[in-house]
Image (cartoon, rainbow, N blue to C red; front, top):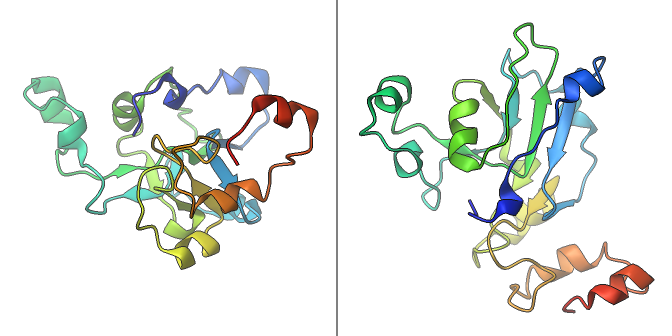
Length: 186
């Protein structure tokens, strides 16, 4: 949900580079993988191109908050009450006969690109909010396959929420020379 260029989705023309791939898993740089993600390859996307966790909760916005529904092209092609979905961890099905290709985009264009093409994954695959919400449930975090520090309070910054930082720092090799040179907030 960030307007930061970091959140831009950039999937290279992967079909041309790796034409034999059936699926790819895309992870943001503010993700912590806590569990084996192999099961994502077994999820039936029911003909959809994108598998993602829906963001229909009260703290997330619907399409009407992202898109300009006064534009007739948008209002005739999209549902203003449709749920968005979480970027940060997406499984893309590349074997679909129609092979939908996409270009660079931020969240609103991404929502439009994959509108009607996204299969909702179980929420436990991808828990969001560790970069902005102080109320993410600890059991949800610990049971999640992937946790996402979406928002401005990244765990490596001083303004991070300290209660979520250990989920990230346990994977950081702080004695590594490259990591030490980053002067990360501990």
